[in-house]
Image (cartoon, rainbow, N blue to C red; front, side, top):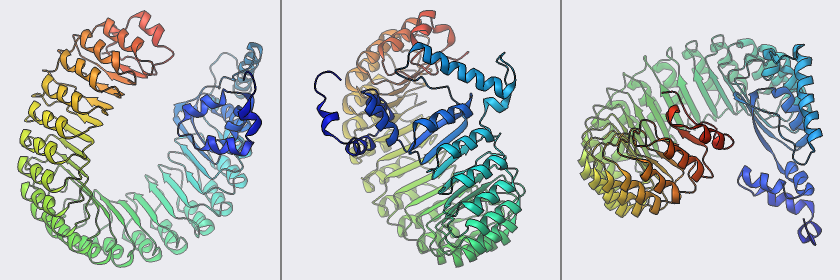
Length: 608
């Protein structure tokens, strides 16, 4: 820094570190680290979280990161993401070549060749990299290893011995064995959160040993697609994990016995998610009788479970606030009525594909669950207008409504919601063909707090509806994909009335043209994501007006827009400094555009 450096002279390290901790974006942190060497050092010390890929020499990458960031407590590693050796700012060109040489030496050492055809051990995170992680980040409290398939029990054992303060461990998709899990249970006595989804190498032995070791501290456990884990493991959880609050089970090999053991042994259970086709009413009755603190219950694909189970939940789980019922074919209105009359603190309800639940069941929710804030009805063909009329009358606190393929719900229902639930902030409707302009006009007149509106493939919604929305609401998110009656007039009204709009999807609107793009450019300067695909009347002219004033644009989809040419694509790339993703036919991208966009666009084009 030139001249007298007052900041570095007057402020101690502790104050600057505290300032860095309040920065809310990685870009801001990176910018501060470039000010001077002192700030670079302090910024590294202030970092507590790292998120990296696990393909492309991750073992070496972990070693380099451990030298730079000494105070990291949370690390997320995902093998689906690639990594590259970081550029070391401030080094001379010779030093950078040394770094490249180090990478080549590392790969050669791992594979025995320099021809670039290295084995998977060097390309994906291995036990060696996990060992380096344990050595370099001794303060680690939270670790996620997502689909790191080369990790084995040896690496996990090394991690457990060195990271004794570990509180959260996510092993999704890792083929670790019982020995590694047992080591975690033996040493990591502070472990609270464990995710074992798709850990196919585990058996009951490993989970039982873990429950014996750190069961007292464990609060959250997730198990899915672990074919060798049975009721034996859940019995151990019920016996030793008395503090368990969250349990997620997705397995064909779990039966009533295991769920019953957890319900009886874990009195503090607050969250229960079950997708177990061999679990019946017997298990759910045990949950209703024993889990009196339950707040969230999600039941997926239950084929052997009826209203009897819901009656028990409604009778016993008085604190229930969040309920999801998905593909539970034998539930009826009577079961939902039992929930409504018994669980009056309910705030979130999702019903998905439960074909025997109809209007009467949801009417009872409207009558008794006055605190409902979010309602999602998906593929509910038997629920009609009267149900939402009752919700509109009774649930004044409703803030979010999601409707998908509800063929019996029409404008009368939406009008009732709009008039009764004036705090509505999110309205998502897809393929509800009886809903048209009248319902959405009512939303625009009464729901002035609405910020998100999605009307996908609603054939009866047209410009009149969006004009009302533009006059009454200040949207931030709008999706009208496939609403064929919407044209320039509707989108122009949105542009004039919603200056805070940052997401817009107008794909498959055949009547939308350049005039709407001009108004969007003038009225929506905060627009970041726009989807224009299959809009046949939009041309390069309209696109140029949009880009001219929407300087914050980050992504633009414009596939199958015959009026947009290579010149329009070039306009987007050159005119938007923040652009990250452009989806367009490959033949519309010129060589010059490819060269210009190479450093700023992560995903440019597809073959179509």
